[in-house]
Length: 577
Image (cartoon, rainbow, N blue to C red; front, side, top):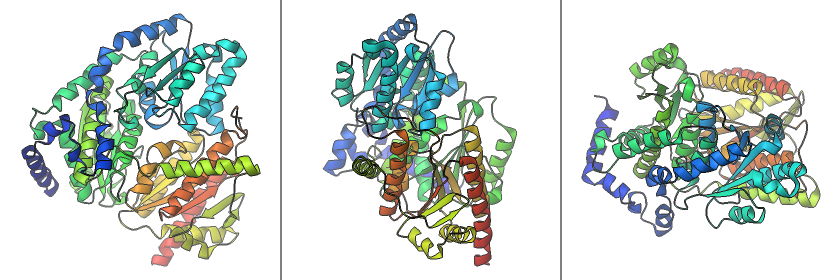
């Protein structure tokens, strides 16, 4: 038995004696916090415990709605949402595809103009149902998407445009009011006591899935099976959700706080959903588990002793190379957890298992896993920058520290501001700046690449190559979060978790902008304001942060960044030697 296994066993025994499961199902907020301000939030955040059962009770109404829109001739459905409103629908879209005769599902969760244009190019506007999805009703991205596509539908259908729109939002929200005023086809209510990232098995996840022809009943029945397996009368050592949560928390407290999720091909987007759940729930008060997703499993020398691996795979889909390398890593002392799904519909189980595990880990880490205290600052910064654009007609822009081949290099203040001492205007200076920035890396550090780019195949390949280059050269965990999507996911961890991240934002000019009806700016300005707003928020938290601006030629710009990194690593090694 390893030390971690022994520690987990001791903790499970203690939690059993403390009636942890009974208190969880009784919705006892003192499992997490005793302060009244936290308990008020927690008391309004535990409805997900019964979400599968409640959704099963309303399936007939949902099924009738799906049949109605199919009969009305709709052929596409587009989710206009962010974070908890978009990630589960995207898992279902990629995992299950579209059943014959159902609506082809699209998910728009990026303000990059090219992403908006790409979705528009893939659909037939008059025969598309738009799902405006926002728990609060005030999500700026969702409302901007609505304004844009409502204008497009109105051009085709005039006063009947509202029938192409559906709202998924909490009762009493401003979006519910908007839906009534604009004569939306339907409003699906959210549950006020379910937070966005815990809402997969509610209307936010299940309505889009049903429109695409996913067997939602089967998905929910599998989830209900996990509910029973995690119930209060199951011994904790046999409870798949609580035992996983204990393992994750004890691993983090032992230094294995980089939770590396290895997914088989058929379910790989589940990692995107889990990333938000884990990062936004645990990354606060200077602690947390950092999810690392979509990373090729490397050889043993690529890793420091801060990784715990979870290998999730559908039976028959596991890859020999990944298996072999995970076995090697396990033999070297890294914890490796293996979860086998009988088929893809077992994802219903996994949505619920990971919600229980995350809530359990939060209790052991001493944090409130149901709030997101560090998310608002980036939103406030974005709002202020947009107000400045309305007044001055442009966004504020500092002078770059260095410029080379059209790539501008910006450096934050605080710890990262020290990098500016090496500033200048040529390749050598940019390389020296980047080397000094990377020199802040120590064992346990991670690098977050935050590109505000369209996630095309070419861009993703270049970014993935860059992250692996950094991982293998520096033996650091690396993550990729496309902006602004990561602001609703790992953004909380980056600003509220441990101060162990090095942040590299990548922005670019847009080939074509798209106007947002009713606003003085388009999506390109909104996207840039979000990037600059988060840059400021990271600085304010003392996080080391730099930014590359690529101009219009993103492919050449990414090549230049890759070359900068190669040279910077050589320079860094020279200094250390």
